[in-house]
Length: 251
Image (cartoon, rainbow, N blue to C red; front, top):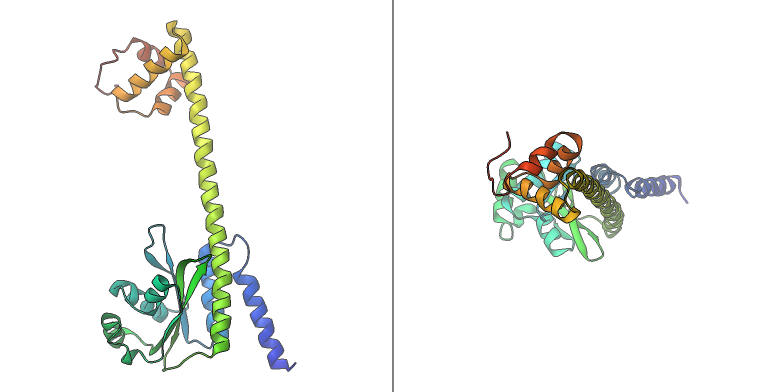
């Protein structure tokens, strides 16, 4: 193995290790992916667009302001290699953008006015049949990446996608857990409030809950908030003495 070849293999190995780091924030993964794409794929610049929860594309990372501009021009015009790559889930490349006006007229015109690049190649960020974004490789002169470069680029994109999807799953699980904890806490407070009302008003627990619920509903308040005030303040007397048909807000 030559020293040069060994050095490149080491760079590739480090790139895969950093891009695939477990539970790294998705913006960190995106930044690393564009960095290594420029280093390993002889691209002049690179950028990443990722879909949000509504499947709208957003620029997540770019190796330079020029690369960010190229991604933004595609999103603003709703067309371009990265947009097609995302929607089709397959690589899209154009060696010379000046010859692609028939396919992406608005984007090509915008690049002619403002964009510094002549060649774009987009690789999908996909996992288990779902495409979550696209990696854009930008070249200042007309150029087609080699098969090896495209293979390495796609492999890096695949590893990055797994990391991003995993991190999103962890975040969703944390949100769900917080929601469950909040719901459990609310349930405990409501049960405590029912006990306070039942004891203070000689009511059974069902009647106490009905009084609590009607008080909150008639005043447009959250049931858990009224329950908290019943437990922590002297609101219990007002709940017990209130007219259930009253609609005005409490003073």
